[in-house]
Amino acid sequence: MSEKKLSANEGIKTRSNYLRGTIAEGLADLSTGSLCEDDQQLLKFHGSYQQDDRDLRANRRKHRLEKAFSFMIRIRVPGGVATPAQWLATDDMAETYANGTIKLTTRQAFQLHGIIKTNLKRTVKAINACAMDSIAACGDVNRNVMCNPNPHLSSVHAEALKLSQDISDHLTPATRAYHEIWLDGEKIESSEEEVEPIYGKTYLPRKFKITVAVPPSNDVDIYANDLSFIAIVEHDKVVGYNVAVGGGMGMTHGNDATFPRLADIIGFCTPEQAVDVAEKVVLVQRDYGDRTDRKHSRLKYTLEDRG
Image 1 (cartoon, rainbow, N blue to C red):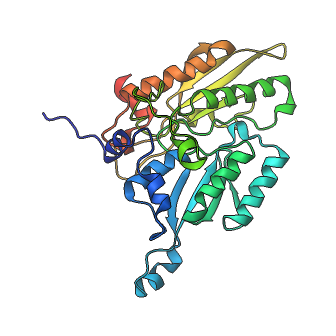
Image 2: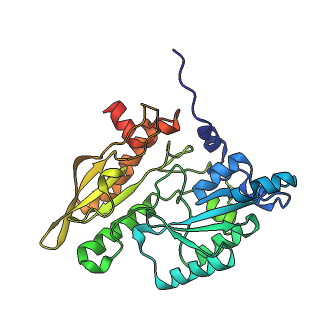
Image 3: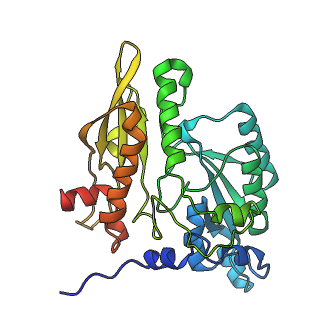
């Protein structure tokens, strides 16, 4: 029996030189408002999707014009906490570079829509200037880490926010591609190959979602995510976290290999162990997740298939 072929996305990641691809060259090409198909996939790791205005397709086709391409940028907001200055800066970006709107996602991120290609780099620089970023907001990596967005409720909530931010920082891709392409970072020439210590060359099989919860509230939906940390509180202090893995509500209609699954509680960790536990669960999915079928590549299927 022959081995299953890896999905096309795996080849794109392997050839990408740690998420660089030809994105920089594509941004410089003013003959089109789009990027090539491979770079569109890599762009997701940088927090952006290429889109087009469907309402204009027929008219532009009639006049033999390419689609009215634009881009969405998703800004990471770990734990859902942004400063007033960051919010005002995002509002200014929406007016200056996007379509004048900000979308607040169900995973506590900000989205800007309607950005044309020539404004993409300007927008990312503006995001960086207010101490935010878009790297890993999309793509086959750990996404925005969620928790209760009000750290002022108690010291326990403040600790939960810090954990979500620490996990987010620890699992951010190490590649310099984001800084080189968007922030004019210096290319470092070296005879040694660049290393992604957690993700490796091909990153994860699919997206990975993490939450931190403070009972009795389940505001982040712990059983519907790849990995969740549930705070155990004694005398107003977090003594540790119960760890839940393998949740997800997505499925493909008519495909019996896909199904919703509630996360399982697999154990307990101390606050000091939580970031390392997050890394180790990610490593399991990196090494054992299905890279042949992207509809069957989330952690929940890895657990169902391998136990």
